[in-house]
Length: 281
Image 1 (cartoon, helix red, strand yellow):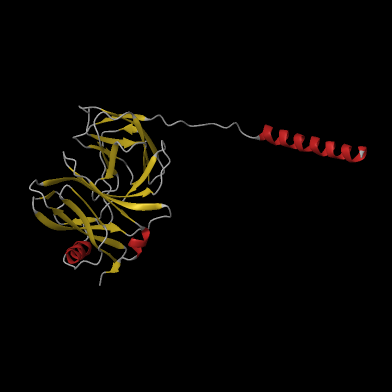
Image 2: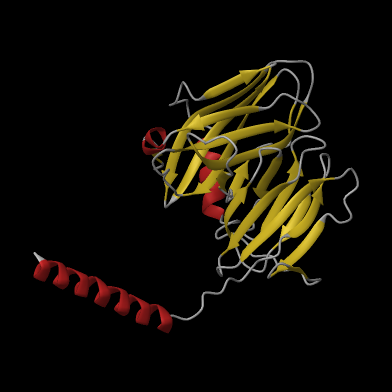
């Protein structure tokens, strides 16, 4: 028994000796800190962030901030406060070159600037626009016009409130482009001015007090009037998006927001619904 104990102790000593020698040869760990950029945004004006590369990921710490890509371009983010006087929160942006941009967002009634050009977390004066692929492609525009006149194939993807209805009539796909046929209906006497028609992928379940990660989908083209729904009228809008699928435990959110109003609507679209897209011949 004593011999066995001696062997065990010798083995343990060797293990510690080897680990200590290995640890001594390891380089010292160093951390590079990204200093967040302080940015104040407001409720009734849009702040534009222009990056040198396409935006690939956006993570915001609060629902009190609205974020979307500018239509037709890949490297411009548009920010706006969802409510006045929101508490300080954060925003993280990752661009196609692997750069990480960190912001501390606060509220102000009078922002000092509405357009900032960013590079490596530093504001620079030279702007650069990275246009989305096929943003003005004639075929996409022709297909969107064709989709706008098709009969309804979807019945239950809709939301309605205060006389305003957001209704998806059809989903189509052609050459890696998805076409959303959307009916906008205003059954009230008050015109509906659109502030935002947004598409983004979000987690089905979120743990309270954690960051809300949302991936915005930038339209390639929008056919129809996406600026106003006159009172007592119905109109069709077709939104063309690059082909995508929805990961597990996530869904596609479609959000319609009224400018200077409260008649906001939203839809949840599952990957199952997306897979039922009709082929556009």
